[in-house]
Length: 199
Image (tube, rainbow, N blue to C red):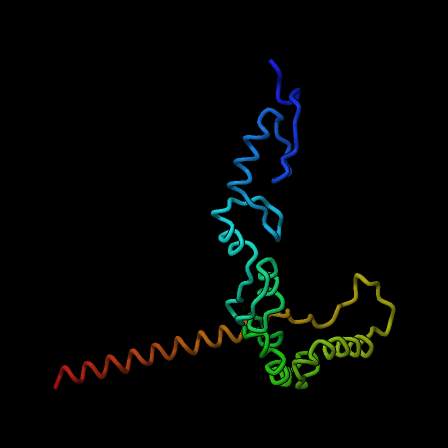
């Protein structure tokens, strides 16, 4: 009995596949009647599904955020990196907003000031990191030890506050204020309903 590898093959002129020579005529008749080559990706697609293949694979699509039309294969990159309506976060306040509005927002937000915990001066948020670096260098130079101290004995000075410390305090403050407001509101509401029941 001959195996498939022992049989002679011929190339189908329609789909360019190697077909056993004994079956080539039957294959070609079926292949040319039922399949067609996609003009974009060159895959063989059933003729009945050719339009669906084009729509699902190659047709331009609109971005759901900005409605710009593009090829399907770059849509994910567009949504993640290039879409002007994608959500990004402000580096100063961590507020999410559309990318198209980020520059204008950061221009205002970066001009807000916060107190430097090292020198007790108010510093713009956009200048905070450069200020803290220079502020640390000034303190290290001015408060250096008068005698030689081994590096293990030397105090590193004030510790830098973690980057996310400011937003965390704001969140706790907001939660505390909200809790107080809810408690006061429920007390006043309860008194109002008690007074209306008495009358």
